[in-house]
Image (tube, rainbow, N blue to C red; front, side):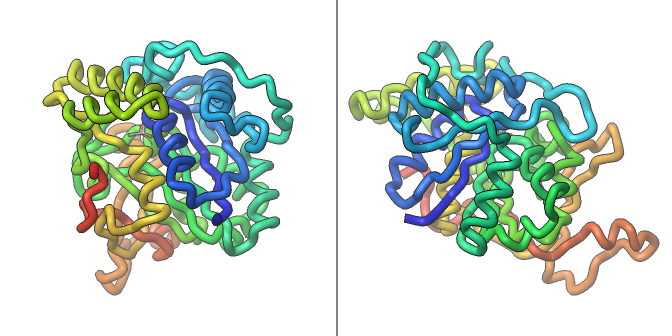
Amino acid sequence: RAPIVLDSDPGIDDAVALQYLLGTGLWDLKAYTSVGGNLPAEQTYLNARALARAMRIDTEVPVHRGAGRPLTRLPYRVAADFHGPAGLGDETLPDSTAAHPTESSAQALLRLSREYEGELTVCATGPLTNIAIALLEDPAVARRVGRFVFMGGAAQVPGNITPVAEFNMWADPDAAELVLSSGIPFTMVDLDASHRWLFRPADLAALEAAGPGTALAARLLRVYMEAYRRSGGDGTCPLHDPLAVGVCADESFVTLAEGAVIVESAAELTRGQTVFVPASAGRIYYPESPALTARARLTGRVALGPGPRDFTK
Ligand code: BDR
Ligand code: CA
């Protein structure tokens, strides 16, 4: 089984992503690193601990406390409207009683990038603050991480928090910009793909009928589906974070294009916008701005849509 770190801000779909990751049996989860995002960092840490317990991994997998605020901003904007007041729908899960380390999420990422140099997959399903802090501490993390797959961005479609920005990128655009211009080999699983694989009421009914193993995920997704319905949806909901985990193992869930992504971190109107620079363009189009050109590192791949394999099956 391959070493992986899941960096997450649970969050309903983050929680489902954890269960999905464990269910594949493909991964050796070295750390579950929490980060603020959907809820303040203290709450996402508590949620991560409780989820680790609910999924019976808390004695083997360390849970780490993440960044308490975005890199240069205060504070995270809480998304309780989608994830529930404490982030896990209507659930009140008991805390883990296992001894979890005092090492922060960023420190754990740094250490694991050394211990598993070249082979570590990092999957991020929240704001990229922890990864940015690790990179600020040691820029070589960018070449030690084997693969970095994250849920975030909207390359060609509208955003979901502003007309142009996806939530995770908008929540900490400075971190996102730092990470994506660091040279790290990234795969961006963005709204272009996650808004195309939708979880439908029939899928929920099947999950509910599948037995106790999926009961928690089913209850969480029922709340998530209802939140999407309230916000004007058609009764379906995206599975953003599980899709990112899925892509770690099977890239055929999405259609990828190589290139760079520049994240808007200075502007208010377009904060968190992800500008995709395709490698196929042959050159970078910021002739008046060497600084901007330098930020476009062609080390990534971006999901521009769904792939041949159906993620909802
Ligand atoms: C992302 O935002 C969060 O609320 C979800 O957990 C997901 O990571 C989707 O934009
Ligand atoms: Ca998330």
